[in-house]
Length: 483
Image 1 (cartoon, rainbow, N blue to C red):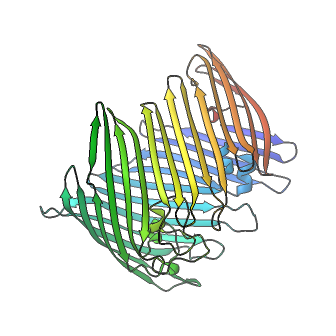
Image 2: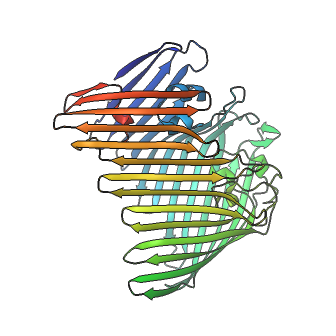
Image 3: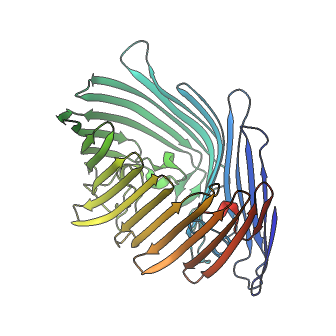
């Protein structure tokens, strides 16, 4: 399918889409957009590839590629609020085989980050070629001991304002581990874990990237205690309380600042920490509510010298407790992280996370998301808040969707979605759609608006008239419907 557009101020643009279903287990979907912008601001191209299929010998291949020439092109010409507002570019293609206990993967991965300032170069992370293998916990020689293995070799690269690696930096990674269950019961679970992590890089970071091999040999010990579990029945209700303590020590990763980060393998640092938490659960015939409150205490607040005061520090020990950034210098304790899930019925659920920083005595961030699906109605609502800090810009976002019916249902269908910036009292995007289907034809209308900075300020009306088993006429496409 080819679509051509002409803008009176910017000039011509177009889209080519190819879809195919070679067999019952395969799919191909290619979407190429392009524009020649005579203002010289937003011309370029974007390519979306989504394809999957089965190969012989139990292998399955998937490609989900998103390539765009610039953030400006995305904000001006592409569709959908989530796409327009995102500065991220993700591309992943892999060939995988998963057998009981063993997984083998060959993959290509590319991640990019655009900045709104066109003079500031973005960040590009690439991993290709890559071969990874994982062996899940297996019993060792009939003993009450389990072994596992995670290994891989890859060519990695990173380009940003300060780091420019060669196009192919070799990385070899080996991570075997042993787990010893000490106590396994319905009341108490206690296990120990020993392992080592051998990672070899052909290049290292010493002010600049140099061809000087870096060998990172880490020793890992972990002890995990869950329980004692306390429970009490209240007729058809049951309340369960379970405390947990997880201790982890990892040593040998004391050259984090000489390692350039491409993925989670590179985020390993020294740590000596304990995480303590308590989980409450309420059951009837299913789980109605769960609430977990947890915090980490770091015996080594420098993480082997990885911490840089006054900067945003991101590595594995701090990411394990919260997805919101908090490490801006020496830290003895993480924020207290409260995570709650409420599911009052089989068709509703709500998730809430709140981070309270005991060092600064304030709520640092919060997020809530909920969904509902009942009869012809479905919807979702999400809210995220982060407080301004030296390492975090403020964020106060509310998003929601409400849908009635679907495009296959005879009669009336309608949908509404919106994104509201509470921080600036601004509707960044909203879409309202309504449609009516008869047995052989349907009519749909859409009213939308975007306000993304000064780049995309737009109000638009679209429609589509469809004939069953024939086609449609209009500007509202099937893949852009909310219902």
